[in-house]
Image (cartoon, rainbow, N blue to C red):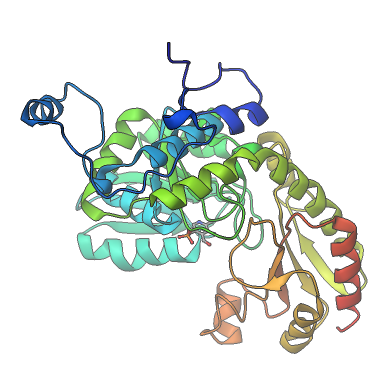
Length: 398
Ligand SMILES: Cc1ncc(COP(=O)(O)O)c(C=O)c1O
């Protein structure tokens, strides 16, 4: 007899990360879910095809509509996030764009908070308008402005928590409350938090989004995206994905499943290391301020304490120096490497003014809140003592 697909509800996240979403037995009695490296799926005869087309059997049809490896990754993420179902994508941006195309219609209106990932903002502001959807951007944390922005045409409220690079925290209960009263669909990009630190669905959020490229896969070796929520909403987004085509490749799905098995261990280590690093930076004479929602001085700390189990692995800090002094610090660190992205086992460092905002002048960067002396550090799985010693020696270059 086939065993249950997921461990019983109530089991710890460590157990869910390993066994959640996995079918037993697996093909070939393998302990791991295989990579179904196939573009299409065969039907034994016309009767089987007609039976499937009539909706009587559940199976795969064509690679753009799904893959068994992808389905396991989706179910595992859903089990971790406490969602009914999930849908995997080729990247976080494919998840965002496909979801918005699926849930919006011409003439509708979107509200988003100003600290959302810049490519999400670019899509909403620059591209949705072409399809007759307009967008209002409100300041993160200004709930009166959020409520005032609602119109009879508003359909979606999209936000992110914690945000990049200042780790601003959005009150998920308040967002869900505004949405419930105005019958809006809420989407929270929870990439920085992961389901280990925050589970937005428990706060009444409709859809949770992840760039699986980051913590979920966790090894800086694969791109992916995930959307999680109620079954019927996910089914509608799946139909849209079948048209737009941004699917999670079977090999990427395998790497994601493998990464997810260690997610709780990795994130707990990253939480603890980032906390120690943030405290060291905050007290360092050559650092102006550290931005980490685990620090009591952070404006979002109280909300973070209420709705998060840990504060994540990204720390941003401003040094007492100009653009060039900041670059000297970034160049002097020996363990973290200069690269975009975050959430992997290798620590990564970047100066946002020269990475994501290079094309802007200092004044334009300041207008969007990016200072020349800002550094973002994604804390990996290295020993935190080594990272702290490395950062200390680099800060001597200010
Ligand atoms: C918070 C957040 N959401 C979404 C994305 C987009 O994800 P991807 O790069 O996997 O498309 C990113 C990428 O940096 C991100 O940081």
